[in-house]
Length: 149
Image (cartoon, rainbow, N blue to C red; front, side):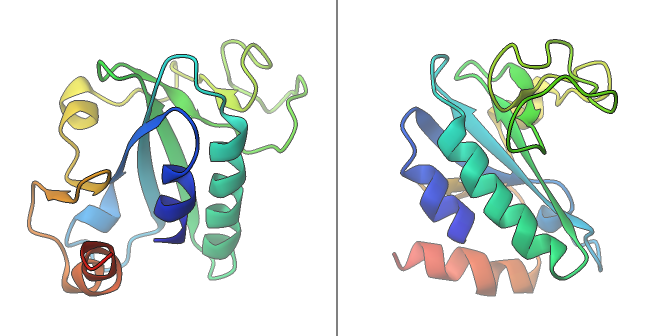
């Protein structure tokens, strides 16, 4: 919820959605997968800062988080880089490491399909939208507080 609130205030962010295991009935999800739809020219720095906070909170309970990015037309462009500053790294699998600050365009490893990016299971912002039955804890801890403001 904190990520959705802070990322929604970032310039160029058009939509924030939950994808992955948290939007399923999987008993023990291992991470939070968030999809952020951005204007093409949006600066990624503010979203990356919010994403690092989410990853830090998730890491403190031995879980993870990924912030996936797509364009308004639903085309997946990559995810937020796990590093605060871009440096060419041996461990980096981005196609264009450093080409766009905070973007890990490791499309050879992972690409989200358009049906998921265009119609994610749970849109958190700007308007709450459910496209699937959500687990009770997600409804109670995430959806209910967002629905009430």
